[in-house]
Image 1 (cartoon, one colour):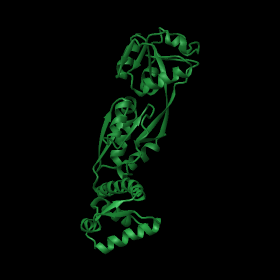
Image 2 (cartoon, one colour):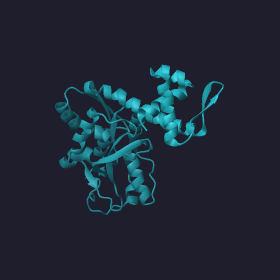
Image 3 (spheres, helix red, strand yellow):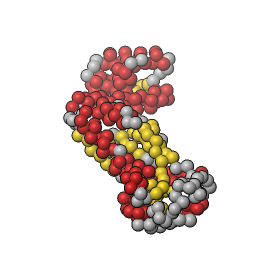
Image 4 (tube, rainbow, N blue to C red):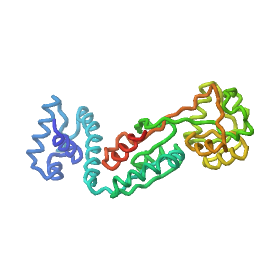
Length: 293
């Protein structure tokens, strides 16, 4: 069994005759006939029946074709991409908002120093939009905060993180005492990311784990900066990745409320199409990503 035999078989199926396949492949008709005979001998079955001078697939022949087509399509795609590996000049990366603002800039900068010939394009958006862009082949891969929803995507964890409840210290003197529980948190005005974001999804998942549902927020925004500003003005409690608030926490502008029964830990994930062939430019970036502490 070789790829050559499978390609000849597929060509005969497409042409409907040995002669037509030989013309398409620029090989002799006897070579085509010999290849089909070798396949039929290998599988111990007839792959074609002759009907009015035309070859018609048998049931077993159709099963083989159904298996062969996606294999050959993936190989053709790999060949096309491999031809451009040595001259590839662009890498398209997606990221969710928190990763795009805090983690990705330093990674892209370090990558540019190592791979100056590669132009890096970045798209930053909510988790659901980024996932759809990867599925549409618009991105080579993406870094997200939320769950992976499509079975067509592969993923692996590259970093651990957690959300936290952030508020003005003067309004919540019990911030680090651990007196607050999830039910108590839901009584406070909440400043939340929009539905569809990885941050909002993880918060709702944590609430569901203690059999609670998310109430209507006082503020809802795709901008984490807007929510942090609102929290600094005492307008409520922002539920956001801790990494976004590190400077404000160090300055004392915000405090982290300890919610004793709410698990807000989460994993940051690298996602990519399961069928996308490996690419050296992408592999170099992923290697840099996984070397991060």
